[in-house]
Length: 321
Length: 185
Figure 1 (cartoon, chains in turn cyan, orange):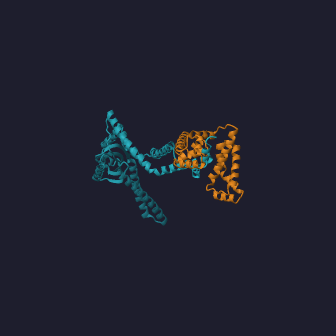
Figure 2 (cartoon, rainbow over the protein chains, first blue to last red):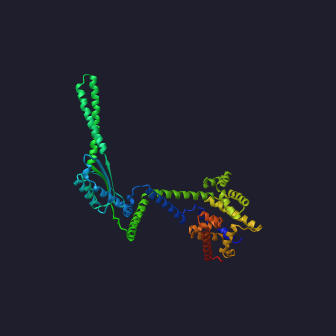
Figure 3 (cartoon, rainbow over the protein chains, first blue to last red):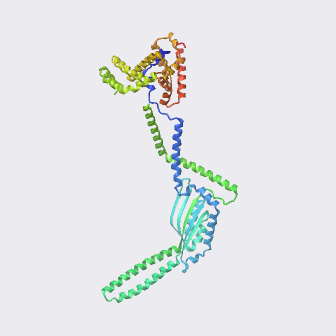
């Protein structure tokens, strides 16, 4: 055999080299495996950041594109304008005539470039028309666009004038109004109260003329029932009076960067699409980065788990050899 | 059982030493023998000879590293058996392929100029000390353990082509190194 001495010499190399050759190899991830793990981690990240959006009904996150959709649908504007005009046509006095009992409830959505100014105008209008704020909320999203929501009560006779003031420094995106005619119900209640009061008078006469204790107790019981019912009905009447005398307006004012243009030009819409699309893209990247940071610990745990699993798999495979 | 305690059993001439040795190193020694002989029966026979040789060697020897000690004995016995079998018939297996690779590295007749085995062992050890760890591991797996290229690639999670290239470069370096030390090609 050739190289017998070389073979024998190699057979007598130092023990440390012999041991080293059969050391458990340090695990290194091939580029392919690294790429696979990163792809899996990115897929998980996209799932945890994007899937919840489909179940989140809050469209304010993509506010700009939603507004653009409103802008291009002229019917919304026409409907809003028609409703608004319709309000102007109503004789506000007729709401409070004794023959008519109407409860007016409106929903007004506004967008504005000058959020603070619009709020200031709104508060001024509320004060000047003797209204009051029943409830309000102000909040902002991560891209710093603010939203103001409030339920405002305005005296019915000032409702239309108040609406005119409220939309100053803002753009109407939605207006809706419902008018509930409660005249019959109100009249029924009034009639019932009158009837009960008349009965109360009669019962009081009986009470004065009662001769026995049992008669007295019976009359007193009936008297109590009548008075309880009168109180209850009068409270209902008072609530109706309040609802009729003060109209309710639910208002939302949202801060925006740009008003959508109501323009038929293709190039204008193309330009707007490009601009809004770019804004959305930037927002999307910001969301992705924030989502990644938010879920960083989940991703780290998943990657560590995958790495440990890979190490165990390699060890088991090597042991089998 | 720890190797120190195993050596103690040999020194106390306790026959359980062989039982424990077999339990611990049977697979290791078998793989060395099989890589050379490629025959189950011959490899088994080699193992039995190994245990006998270890029993006879300890004492007086007290190896510092029992694993490499028994591995070398197995390797040498396997090589002897291989030479014996080679004389009887032509063998072609992974072991002969690795021998052919070493033939490319250096010719046997070069040892006429420098024949001391100990000096050659020293030179080989010096050469290995200057290799990258990976290249050294591949070299020892191939030319000490006589593992196949495929097995080495799987062990180190590498490709066969990368292993072949590394071994080729190492053999060329070994050739140059031995040339510089006075061996002739």
